[in-house]
Length: 94
Image (cartoon, rainbow, N blue to C red; front, side, top):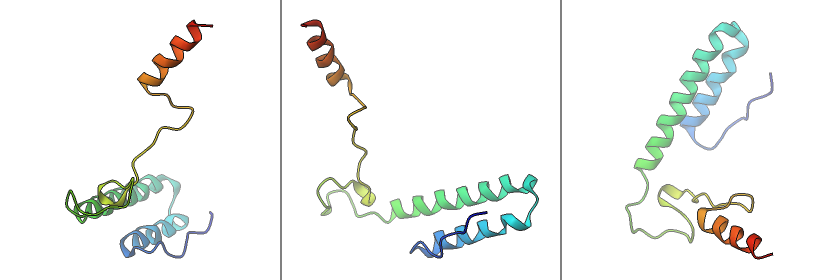
């Protein structure tokens, strides 16, 4: 098994990651339960972070969503509907 990071900077996450260290001591049949527990703990931690986010309208860095997240942006391989329609028209004009 690969080594786990020493710390993440968040005590709650560090405790969850440390719990994954016991996988080596358990039979494989019990691994799913450990992963489920870790996943639930990480979800709860993320939910708590969202609850601590500054209120709507608070000062944020440009492009930063509520809760400190940067919103997903479409990459060049992902076209929205308006981009696809424009592409279809230009292909038809050739």
